[in-house]
Length: 437
Image 1 (cartoon, rainbow, N blue to C red):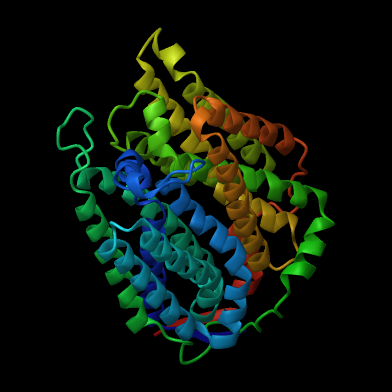
Image 2: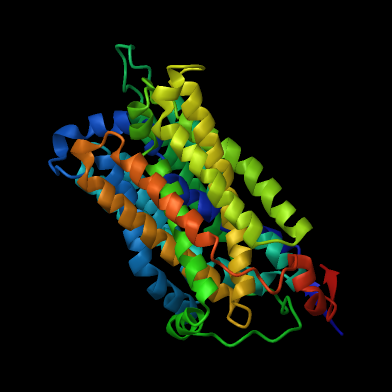
């Protein structure tokens, strides 16, 4: 048994990570809740027939991450944490201010979004490395959990605040006013959030945070080959990616879907309902999964519950004509989707780590994120092709994907290592005596 020191400065490192995540994530979907306003603002500068300005800005994030995630991992090993965070901060500040200062020139806004997407790739690929250097083993799950929660909290923030910064009432003559204020607010928010970590970040604590030797780095291709030999893990990767892709597609196109379902104002209510349900599900269902020691059961349950949620969206006008109204039915459906799909993310992540026992958990989580972003990019690109025939086509297609995921999840094998995070690390934790500094 060996003693290690846990320095209080680790909490400032964690704060730096959270602020960097806020800085880049809010710029991803900050226009999604007010998509009609943003699309109207740029309509004279946008001549692409198969997409709209908001969808294209969101798509940039997805495509850039898929391409840049592996080079970002290389840069992390080559340059170290401090340089990576400095570069990510510079990209985030440059991109955020560019989008605000040149907001009337869509091509330059798109350039700013590109730099923000590069910053996101650098930030998300560095999380596990930074946490492993600064936190003792018993606290790493908590630290990574906080960074994951901050990603979704930042998206919830834009769903609530963006509609408040513009005039979005359809009947108001000033409809659309305040768009400049919205861009300025989020640019300054992102700039401050990216600037603070540049001063706080440190490469390493004075002494190692763990007495255990660092595991050797395992390449993505060798890990992918090992994962491919486990059928249930391979299937889980596909199903997890589809669920995440469907969820993010709904968030990206939330205002267009709201208009389709009869919401006259760009008020973000549909997205807020989705996040409200998601927060309940993400807290309750993973805890129940630990309590009853069932991964497959609760993962399948999440997939099953997503079906009535998406169907309520598809048929909200027909059902709403009989009782409650279409908007109320849509809000109920949205909250059910959020509850099920957001809860499936932590359950699926732990499920994958257990199925892939012997494969680096860092690699598994990185590949889950990579495949999920790729799935969302593919779904979004396909949806762009049907823009003129939007109607219920997108929602029906997403429903079909969720049905396929539900069926596929029933064929997965239950985890043979169903343990909680604390139990999983118990043997490792007992090897360390942590002294707080």
